[in-house]
Length: 546
View 1 (tube, rainbow, N blue to C red):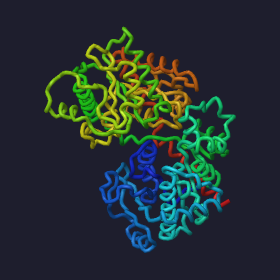
View 2: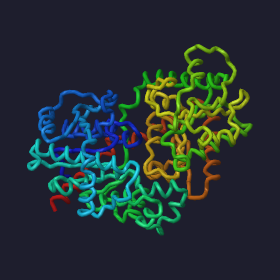
View 3: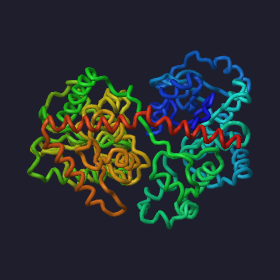
View 4: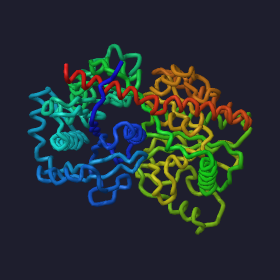
């Protein structure tokens, strides 16, 4: 079948040139593949949230859109045009959306009249997201005129509920543009899981609208549901979330668009080894400076990472599994474990910083030798409290030491000069025992770096890996542990068993597993997954012209 291919693709996300979470990784790794097929005809639109500060992910430079900027300014659009500093260097437009807050009431009134979106009870980030989405739609209107859109096949792709009003504005005002909307996780599904309600056992009995009222999610849910309903092509990132969309949004997705990865983010062989050695040295140094005990050369490094969603991401079960390992007398190696999850940070620890730069040469353990940064809410922090409860005091005699790194690793921290990928490469394994995980970029990133990973059957990536390669055990490179609403003990024990296997393996056995992990990552390369977006664009353009 020959697909209709767009001449231009406008793609909008709150995470364009704005590194927050998984959607940034989706877009930034997919960009190079789209640049190959649509050179400078793929244009990303994001929020100008850096104001007068320099955005480290954006290069303001000349592009083919320079002439459009004058037109945009005349139309009241304050934009920065340049390139996203990622592989492929695609064109990026950052829009200042603050001036459009004065149109908020009219925008919400229009959205109610056109699409029955209930914005009255919006709160938190709702207003900011909707105004940015609206401003992005105005940018598209202006661009559409500039490129002579009437004679072009144009796609407008919107990511997550935060851009929904932009998608619907374009649907109303620019009827010849094919609109695509991708939900990376339904707002109501995430809320149900986050409120400790059994999502999966009760999914067939939940009504999305009723649950939105119950959980005070009416505005976001209404916006997401109506966007999914009215765009030309509605997609989501995994089979598991497709079921969730059908049940909670009352809308069947047109196509599942799984998240791939771009190999350019992974260092080549010679550099890979050097970067891995450097990462292990940095991690070992942090352990030593905190605990007063230098890890052995063959210490086993393991981590979890991602958003600070204590239950949804399975952080609690990861720590529980480590505690079970701590009690074992069958460990053949020392284990250095890390929780790399950004919390409510107050400041980097000065005593740790002093030790790292050589100002303090004493070797006794620091006070609270399990955390690298002070938090605003140390007494209420769930990770800290679980570590205390399970006596993770990181004594010299303990074979399992656990360190909490509660920052977003960008490479600019006072203690950590490395980005997340710069430290990830030093790990021997990762663990992501998610309860709510529409896709799961963190395990995919791990296997892309040849690191075996443990995930669950409630992760979109886990379901895909199992379906694609039959991966269910750690020997295959990806362990997919069966998880339900209620089997937390079995999951924690399964993690312990997998980690014990890995820790006690020979170097030769570990090399085989690392090779297996990388082989799975190759199957999720964007060269394989871009076809699903090609299909989505085709559906949108076909439906637009139907």
